[in-house]
Length: 191
Image (tube, rainbow, N blue to C red; front, side):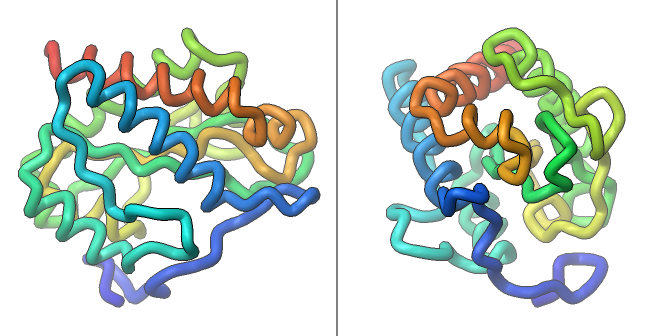
C-alpha cells in the first residue's frame, strides 16, 4: 500500500523476544491498560483493533480509522526488534507529508511529552541505537504520514535485548508504560 511517500507492506507480524513473546501481544496489552486508564479519566477511546487475534488492519486503514474518529491525539504503541546489544525506547515523530502538515508541530510537542513521561514513569532508558535522546523523525510510515491528528509512534524498548525483553514481557512494566502514555496525553491535551 502507498504510505504517502513510497510503497510498503500492508502488515507484518512484528518482532518477538528470543523466548517467543510477540510484539503484538505486548502492544495489545499496553493498549488495553491505557484504554482502561483513559476511560477512567472520562476519555472516549478508539482502538484500531479489538482483539489480539493476529495482525490488525493495514496501516493506511488504521490512519483512516484515526482520522474518521476526529481524535484529539493518537499514539501507536510498538516494541522494536533492534540489535541485541541495543537498549531503550524511541519516539518516532512525523515529517510534513501533505495530509499531516497541519499537525506536525502538535505531533512534535506530543513526542516531547511522551519522551518525558516514559523517562519519569519507567526505568526504560532512551534508545542507544536509534534516534537522538529518544526521538527520531520518520517519513516512511503510513500511520504518521497519513494522519490528520497529532500522532507519534513509540518503540517502548528492544525485544531483542535481554534486559529490555525482561521489562517488556512484565505486566508491571506494561502498566508503567500505559501510565506514562496517559500522563503524556493528559499533559498534551492540557496544552
